[in-house]
Image (cartoon, rainbow, N blue to C red; front, side, top):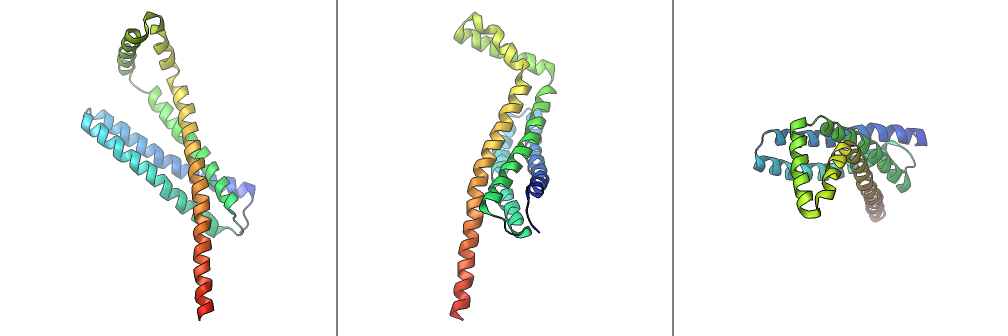
Length: 186
């Protein structure tokens, strides 16, 4: 099959859904650990799930880029890079939305406690003039979380795509060279 722009978006959408689901599952597991109330469990889960998500995304990107290269004819390094960036854009959208929803659904008493503690800390360090600023930031926290999470996912995915696209095609060049040498030797 030939790879065109529409097909690239369709493939990226399908894979972006997988990435977004995987990252959202890791986020939900971290939130589930936070509900236990155990500080050790929360910290251990956060570290372990961060590593699982970080390295899992690397392995998934490698797998899906190899699948793209093998499934379509004439896939270039640039196509693989654009594919990865589109996956990052779409999966980041899913993860950012889930993260913002979790923040919006946070219990009000928990939010009030955090705001109170932050107001106390800000007032102690910067003075009484900044006391209301914490409330304004917390009111917009889902929006800020959405934007920064989406941006982080896109930048991480773009960097990972650039590295993986080169790796996939460099690996193919070296493997192809070995096969040709074996044929010449025989």
